[in-house]
Length: 454
Image (cartoon, rainbow, N blue to C red; front, side, top):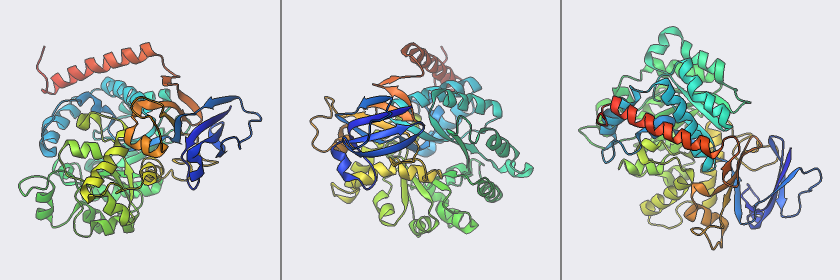
């Protein structure tokens, strides 16, 4: 199948002239050609999609996400991270069942797809069996999206040579035509260490396994309150080291790490991150929702650190919208640095696409509109009441667009969203899915003691 996207403002590396309109040719699963409007041959093209009035970007890649968090929307609000973990996250996590995971996985996949997000890192906080993973990844395969599944490793896994992680990797890595890839969660931050979810032996052995499998590792890092009584600062003062220094001293901090949040780097943390070529996953609306502080993203970028973007999960900030994260990132950094152009617009797009792809070791074929790259593409309509009139497509997209402005979305060359409508499922299915998710959210909240019994 050869599909030509024609007439839109195409955002491609090193090709600024394409912002005034361009053609992009999809051939099977890959991008075959792109160029200024009218320069790509239509010979052999099966279908032309008119993208006039739209902006064409790589599919957005959510570098830090927790799919099942949608069940906690609106629960545990207005408390700091430490209270939220103990009073909301843990009770819900401990009461999840396999059907909860299945419904949440499908709804999260469709929600992100509807917002132009084609790939996500699903950072698990709960240990999973093969049955759990069937429930999570089956809907991902059916929805057609791409997921980088981050399998939890815990201290007890070191005793049997990480057998569960090895089994999961063997079963799922490369599944669904390569759309599912597997990495590992090695928690190393204060809050998770306090919950008994980390040890030096686990981090060392888990990292060795990631090197063996040539995959990514993700961990929550340097988040929470900066209080001497509770939270991250208390931990730093007690141990005499930061989360980043902990990983560095163990000799494991390298380019396969995704350091989620990293709100409070201290001392030489930024230098260590830069030298390691690891990636920070910034989740601005989530961090603001918890009142956790403003991550020094511009300082990170100026220090040569790769920064990717993510949403964290709707239990925190009630959204999976990656377009929101673009705007939040710029506006918060503008405030922090008292300058309206703190981060260049093109850099923001790269953070949500190519930099996220590099974080999961897929940057050679994903996250950019280039010939030979995988055809994961999002087309956003800018001819809307809230976006028009348009003088500069990229400025308008970042500051005025919404995730639901996604008009056409392709993954692996397959069109999964056509004029705002799903191609693999119908509206009745989505309505029923939302009803089931609502029922399950209420039941889970009651089991966790966060909602009153009926």
